[in-house]
Image (tube, rainbow, N blue to C red; front, side, top):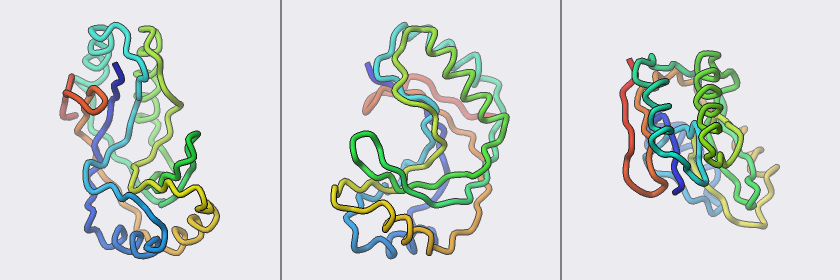
Length: 173
């Protein structure tokens, strides 16, 4: 079973900066994410020992505090499959958040579960699957956006099957 742990990010599709971004990239076929914004803490290609993985969620998240992150950059990266991911990110990841992510990922690795990729703090805003798109052109257009830094408090976590049921949910303190 594929599964993942996410922390929800309270941004709006209708925010002025997001509208400006969509306008700037209007000539590029972007599949825009409309809601359900989150940071994936860990994605498991294959989940082994689900009860143990859920116990790890309880261990680290039942009494965890909400996290404040300052998102200060719009950017794009390419995936191994050739997709371009237009995203929101932070140039400085709070140490407490990075430590929490590392601890959860390290313990899950010991369950025998297959963790898909390294952690990269980003909130997917859109996906570009056009193989002819040039990442440098996309970066140039994104850099023209007047993006205000956003300091957001993140407190909703959810562990779920990929495209399936919720397994664990919690609101951080």
